[in-house]
Image 1 (cartoon, rainbow, N blue to C red):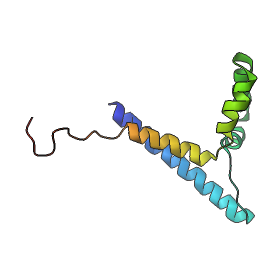
Image 2 (image 1 turned 180 degrees about the vertical axis):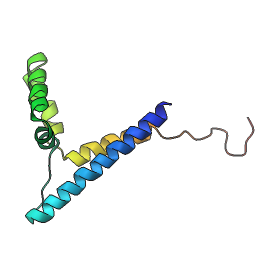
Image 3 (image 1 turned 180 degrees about the horizontal axis):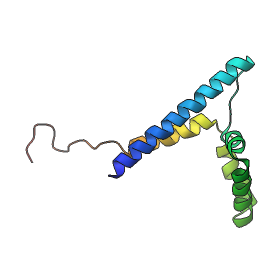
Image 4 (image 1 turned 60 degrees about the horizontal axis):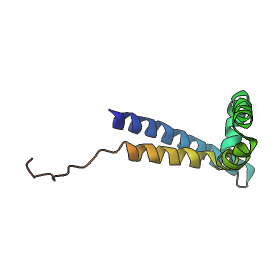
Amino acid sequence: MFSFIFRFLGFIILALALVLAVLDITRSITASSLVITSLGDAWAGFNPLSFAAAKDAVTSAVNPVVWDGGFAVLLALPSWLVFWLLAMVLLWLGQKRSNRFGRFASR
């Protein structure tokens, strides 16, 4: 049951990573220079209110150092890379287990 959910979410997130990579490639071709959209820029462009709310929540509830040290590093990575890594982890968790006894062995 869970393997199906992990694989399904993994393929959906992998498709999102592919779309984000194609967007970066298209912007790079248009600008005639390398354009890489970070996860923070993509999030702030998609929904700036939730980005600001998340920043305020982390800095006020935990510590501003957590946002600057931990989340800022993650948000500076390319968006397609973050989603690709998440998809690979989900697909790995959802992979079908091999038969312990082999194909022709009896149980």
